[in-house]
Image 1 (cartoon, one colour):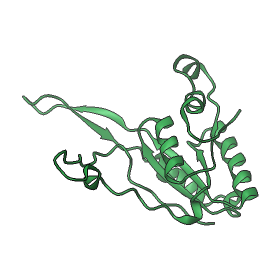
Image 2 (cartoon, rainbow, N blue to C red; image 1 turned 180 degrees about the vertical axis):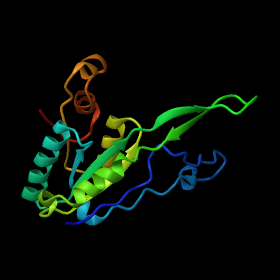
Image 3 (cartoon, rainbow, N blue to C red; image 1 turned 90 degrees about the vertical axis):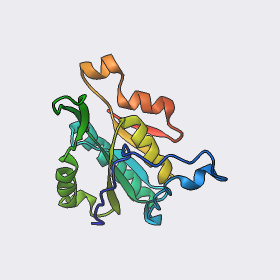
Amino acid sequence: MAGHEFFEPADRKRPVADPTAADPLAAEEPRPVCDPAFRHGVVVGFDGSTSSERALAYAIGMAHGSHSGLIIVHVANRLPTTVWAGCEPPVFVDVPDHRTEVLGLELACADYLAEVPWILVERGGDICHELEEVGREYEADAIVVGSTHGIVGRIFGSVAGRLAKRAQRPVIVIP
């Protein structure tokens, strides 16, 4: 078992580049250095649902077959909550989702992950954007997601469908 690590959510405010600086990109935060063991690995979206468990099983097989690492991504729900303090205008505050910690503990105890190196990455924001961003950061060979079932997927479009349209790397959708 390789373990897991929790990254800071990507939706945190980043410093803005100084437009008067000689190199406007110099003021940006440096891109996090990825562990070489996970570069060109397999990214899988995981939320504990049945379809994400099937996607995880498929991704484990891909990573094991290609002798690469597995990057398990949980995009946390950050629910905006309104806080009102007297005369001040309402403020929106993100309420953290502690589900990632629970998923991490479940995955750490899972025997089926013993044969592949893996990490758990937490992100906050749009699921499609975050999966694509993690895939870019790790130069992933593929992104594996489970299909969305139900009325919500039909009305708003599934994560898998939106990701397949916009991703710059192969997307594998597991039913």
